[in-house]
Length: 167
Ligand code: RP5
Image (cartoon, rainbow, N blue to C red; front, top):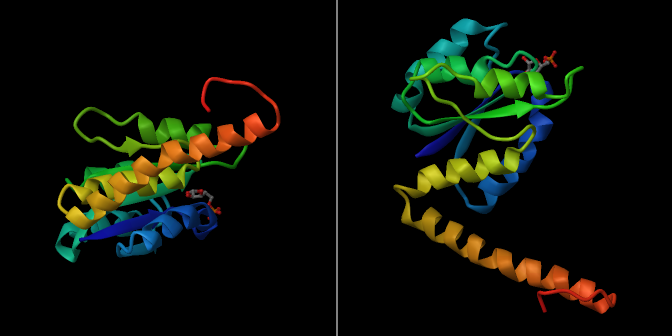
């Protein structure tokens, strides 16, 4: 049970750091490869076709510009694939978002927001949690901690004398 991460370029890796932090907190194993759908298409096909037998349960595929990597990966495996559009470039990630989200019927890629590595990380954990009680429990704990954070932020507003609904 491992998360497989593929990025189109090493220049994408800084965005992925936020996902690595989350997975380290949850102590789930992940492996990372740089594979380009355009510059090394054979690797992309081979990676996806062998991922399940290498113990990978879910794949996070991140790419920018004309981002075909998540789609090519999804075309070659029935493992769940999460697409992470990388921002930057003249279109600031809108090109990558549209490329990744508009998959043809039958080859889905679960697309998260531009540069939203945190949501890619959590979505991967949600998928792992289906078969891992420890991860499921940690996710439930995390969710139940979120309202407390909102309460604390509202408390700061009250301390500034700004009235509102939440005490
Ligand atoms: C995409 O092209 C990569 O995913 C990256 O976001 C972008 C630029 O790649 P480099 O020129 O920095 O290698 O394929």
